Length: 73
Image (tube, rainbow, N blue to C red; front, top):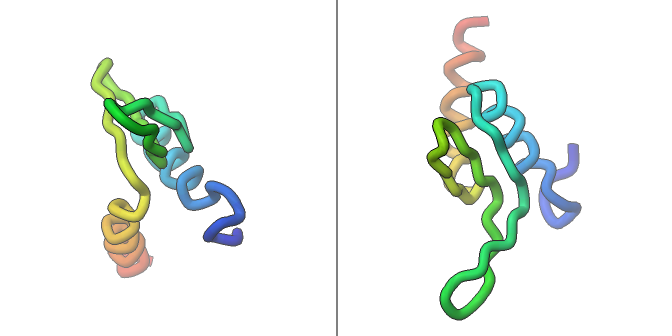
């Protein structure tokens, strides 16, 4: 898997992980703000509550989870 400007591979991975946790997800969504458009990496929804997120903020959380999993192998 190539990360970076090749598209959304990391964002898709985050979306798949969140789907496994019961969320419905959309990746690479453009949202209209008051003045400009914003790209939101992942919008996850559960119980009709949207949870927008930029994957860069999630990378530390995911790294910690992977490290925790690796300790149990």
